[in-house]
Image 1: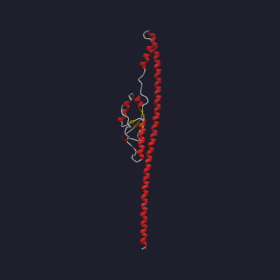
Image 2 (image 1 turned 45 degrees about the horizontal axis):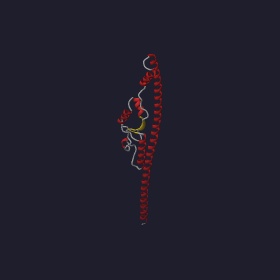
Image 3 (image 1 turned 60 degrees about the vertical axis):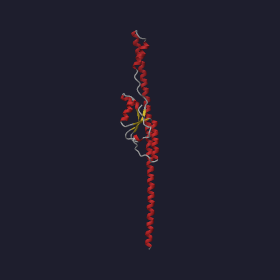
Image 4 (image 1 turned 180 degrees about the horizontal axis):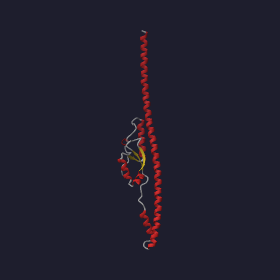
Length: 200
């Protein structure tokens, strides 16, 4: 009889321990999920910081490029004005300043684009395939227009957006990650509505 009581007590203890272990496993699973969500939020925050730094560097480079272009243009126009005036002085036709101004104006290059910086989310999605791009620099390098560069990037599977739209999109993704409604990576097509830049 005593052994039956002991077996019953052991059985109750085992059942209680199994129930405690089940509860503990659920607590650990919830904590692991919470840590996973926090890790995703940290990934998104690091991404935002990295892309904003890239954009700031590109803006600085655009300012420097624009200033250099302007300086070269002004120097070239001054030289053309002086040469045109000198040539007109020897020719006795046109007034020297008018001839110089005409020559300087015709030598002025068409203004290349400067300053358009967008965030590009590629086919790999967020967070792995995101970068700031200077659409203006790519247009100057290719000799095309900014619109052509944007179209080319879109054809390559990129979603383009202004910096503000990108930060708003990441803020939304962070909130979704915190409540467990999101798992990284996120493809560009799943970004919150209104973040993509449309072709003008």
